[in-house]
Amino acid sequence: MRLLLTTVALLGLGATAALAQYNPPALPAEGSVSGTLSTQDLPLGYGSFAKDYSIELEADTVIRATLRSGDFDTLLILIGPDGNTILENDDYEFGVSTNSQLFSPIDASGRYILRVSSYGSYYYDEYTEESTTPTFGGSFDLDVQLSRLTPL
Image 1: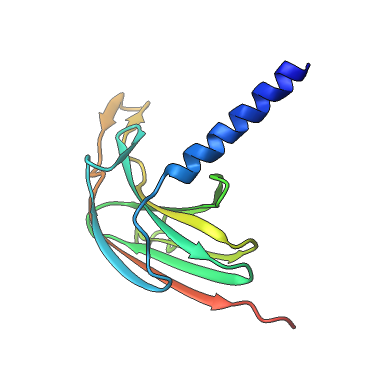
Image 2: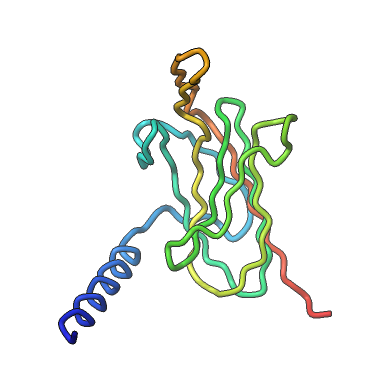
């Protein structure tokens, strides 16, 4: 039993250490960044790729992040300091655009990751039995705005 607990504890430490070593480029606390998503970025499977940006956030902050691209259908993901996905969005203006937006209060201070990706890079239509591979990348703009929560 002791061996099992030690092994589980060490595996947990290994995951934490690996997460601590991952160091994507930092975003400014507020502002914009422009970039390009390509096959040289982080592969996610199904033909998708991602570009990660780290951002230091404080508790009681509200983040609004908007991802725009005229080249691909965007997907924006907020990942917490523990490596778990907090929120993701595709098509915040459903039927109007393929841009993404996240709006979320932050409960704990720490280093978060905003992941820029594309949605639906590979699709198989069972009715026509055809596969399609939409454009998975291109240029993008990521805008970040922060505000403080105020107690009532």
